[in-house]
Image (tube, rainbow over all chains, first blue to last red; front, side, top):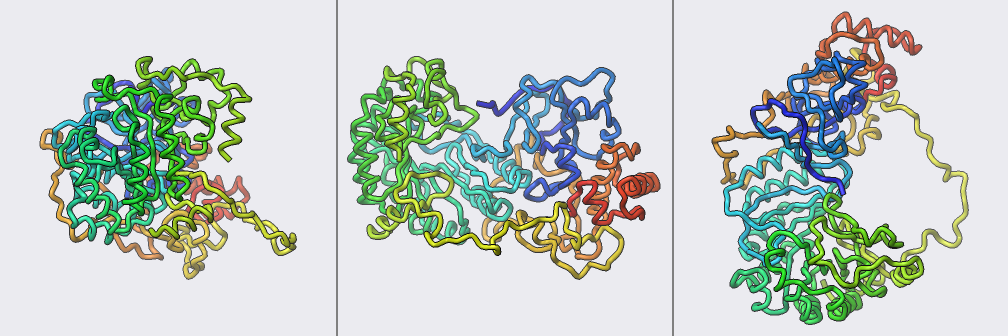
Length: 409
Length: 195
């Protein structure tokens, strides 16, 4: 786990900035071409380790936005007007990253991390649902500025074929902004596959069909949650009347626009009992779905407040989970199990288990340190607590892990 | 998707969703059983330089190669267009109207637009770099010379006497033609990719 933000020594910028961190070697070799889109020198923050700063003080005359030294400034060294140094965590910001600076704050946020598959364009804090287990509770604020920030961020990213997520909140609330961002992703980052998380309710409006068809992004997929095979259960989980009907109409409209669709099911006390019925429903009624993700719950945000209603030990839903996964698999629907450690699923389900937790919030607990499967296990969310810990957590011996590995073939 | 197609997908071991590795049955064999090694299948040999010897270098101040376009193999991971490509300009879809506004007035308008953004001519011609492009390349050359201890002056993007002198000293030490120009051989030796 590598955090996405850290504090540096105070700086004196007067407006929020997005900056691309670039090493001297990379500046020499590629110059502004390190950025996938349109960039200029004042978007660059040059990486100057302290020995290089001492040997080449005249590099400070480069007309870039500023410099960053990944440690304390050496004694007697010169520094530039904008010169980040003395981070609390030296690992967080690295060359290639895009960082956000805010006036009168020492916090530096990494908005793009080079080489990571967990990069995210965060669209909004707003949402039209209020799911009981929401890990990122919505706020009712006008945050359209995220659109401009993301458009700028796309320019400064590396080209290259990492995954890029788009999430919120509910990204489709800013319809024009989202379409503009997707169009820009296609133009500037054509190699990156894009995965958007949306509750799909607004796709009920058929005007999305033409918009998404004309966009024609070749590597765009949509992760849409569906929590039950019936409206009452689903609407209760998302705490919005009529949501089930809207999401289903939305799913059909996405299919009409020939979009790649993934169904996401968060496993909880409310959703686990009818998983086999839900799998059957998806197979019968949504035959265009390309992937079904059955996902362990993230114990943060609203989920903590609703612990009693949501918590079920994963050991206690092994049977319906197993039925649902094999039902879909046997019928040719790709299916995955996310966020569940290997010791909580029977070996025959290990072929579905993925290391699904974003690198910046993924960790392993004490019980994992002796486990033979630690390199192929999803591990835990950083928000994991005892209250959310299954009674089945235990280190796997090498022999036990072999059984998992063999049945995954 | 029809049921039949689903079965094809399962049997073919093909996954359709990008990015995720789905467990599937029946991996395809890696090669035919009758495959024989052949002299024609030797691994290709690449010249170990950043820029090909006949790369289009519009910064070298001579034009003998300006008709070539063989630069493409070295820029293939950018946009796929051959030779020199001008910076991409994104224009929003014509049909959408931007209903949102820049960040709230308290943080100033359009917080993330680059200040004093350079606007080089959108249709940069192949033969003459714009002043901004030239100055950016000179800055990179000055930086490379500075790191190698040939140049002590300001990194300002101006090809003045100090920079030219440093360049000539570097060329001399590197057994290159001493001409004080940013020719392709010199850029290769400095590790500078032609933009």
